[in-house]
Length: 103
Length: 213
Image 1 (cartoon, each protein chain N blue to C red):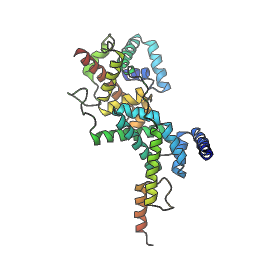
Image 2: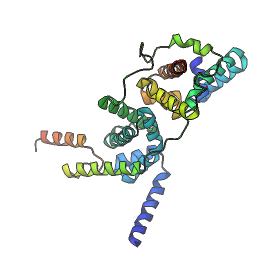
Image 3: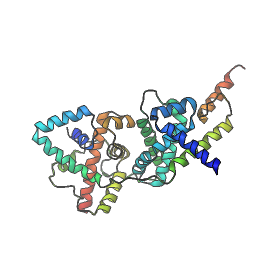
Image 4: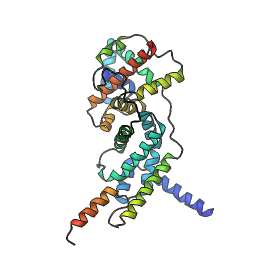
C-alpha cells in the first residue's frame, strides 16, 4: 500500500487506482498518517522543482545533423527505391539482398 | 529580402500545419513519406521535455545534448520499427533512456558509486530504512538553504543507480504514470513502484547521512 500512496502523492496512479486509495484513506485513519509520512519523504525532490532550459537552438542543430546524415546516406546509396528516410543499415541490407538476386 | 521573407512565411505555414498533428501522425508521415517537416516538428516539440529528462538523468549538459541528438538519430534510423498503435511519447523516452545509458557506460562519465555502497541492488526493499517511514520529523535536510538543498538533491538523484534514477526522473520530474514509466523502461508496473519507493528511501537515507556528517 505504501507504493500506492507514493503513486497517489506523485500523481502516478491511474484514475481507478486513485479512487481506491481515496476510499481507503477516508475509511482508515492509520493510512492517512502514513500518507503524511510519504509526503515528508517525497519533499526533498521538490527542492529541485526548477525548469531546465535546453541550450539555444538544440532542436534546430539536431534537425541539421539528421539532414546531413540523410544527405550522406543519399550520396552513398542514391537508389530511388530507397525512401528519403532510409538509414545506412537498411541500405546495406538492400544492397546485400540485391547482390543475391539472379540478375 | 522579399524572397527570404516569403520563404519564412512558407516555413511558418508549414510548421503550423504540422503543429496540429499528433505525435503518432508525425511519425507516420515521416515513416511513410519521409516528410522532413513532420520530423522537425517532433524534434522541436520534444526539445525542452526530453532535454530536461536527459539533463537530470546524466547530470551533465554536454552529455544531455549528445544524448538528445543521438535519440533523434535513432528515431530517424528506426522509425520503420515503430509499431502502429503504440504511443510515441513512451517510445521516445525508451530510446532516450537507452541512449543515455549507452553514453554513460561508454564514456564512464559518471562515478559508479551508489548511495549505499554496501548493497547496490536496485530492487531491494531497503527494509533497513523502514525507520525513516516511522519518523515523525521533517526530512533531515530541511535546515539547508534552498540553493544548497537544490544542489544536494540533484546530486543525490544523479548518484542513484541508473534504474532508480530513471524511475525518479520519469515519474516525479517528467510526470509519467507508473504504467507509462513501466512501458518506457519495459519492466512490470510492480518493478517501477518498487524502484521508486527504494529511490525515495535511499534519498532520505543519504540526506540523513549528510545531515549527521
